[in-house]
Image 1 (cartoon, rainbow, N blue to C red):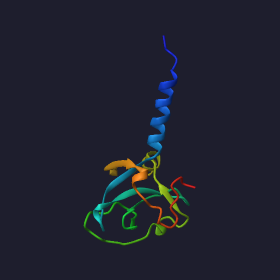
Image 2 (tube, one colour):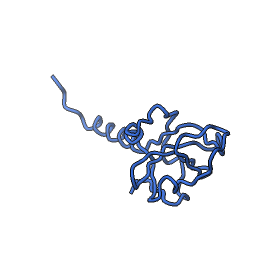
Image 3 (tube, rainbow, N blue to C red):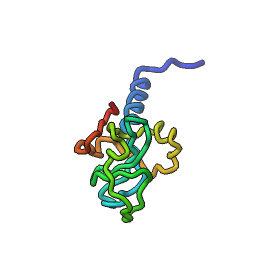
Length: 123
């Protein structure tokens, strides 16, 4: 016999969902600023494509960069001309890039507020 969910459990599920929604995913170190930054999974607003960007130096890449190897120095606008936001796990999985996840963090700890076109809520 199943017991109905109590209010505290429902509240915990709401918190867990909110935490998952505010989670960001990292593909490794930034090639430009190494361990001072990271290659964060981002989503272009115009087509939903996933790319990578570093909040510390503002560089962006189509593929995760190799630490300490600077092949390109492009801005996020190159990959997201209509703006961008943090990619969610569902976006990363849909793009077939889940295997590239090297870690995760809380979105509030990564500041893209100075990056033109960044929209934390994705709109």
